[in-house]
Length: 71
Image (cartoon, rainbow, N blue to C red; front, side):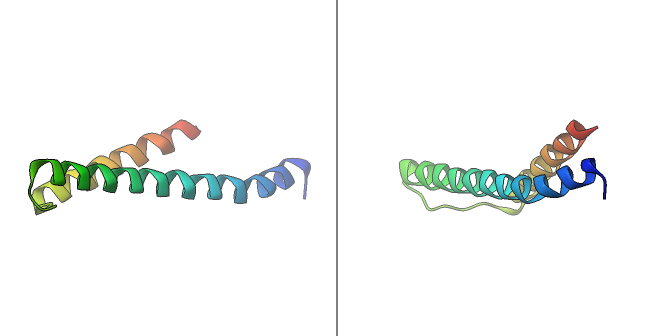
């Protein structure tokens, strides 16, 4: 195993951990903002199918952009 492969293998767990933390913090922040908005408007939190689909496509687009950053 050459030096470059050793360096990549030692970085992989760190990158995965950072990605998991960023994802968890982003998800928590989003949930907090959604609940705050629902409380402010006096209604209950409800996301319909159209909103869920838009959110899913937005997340997929963001992931695609992140993957393009690598190369």
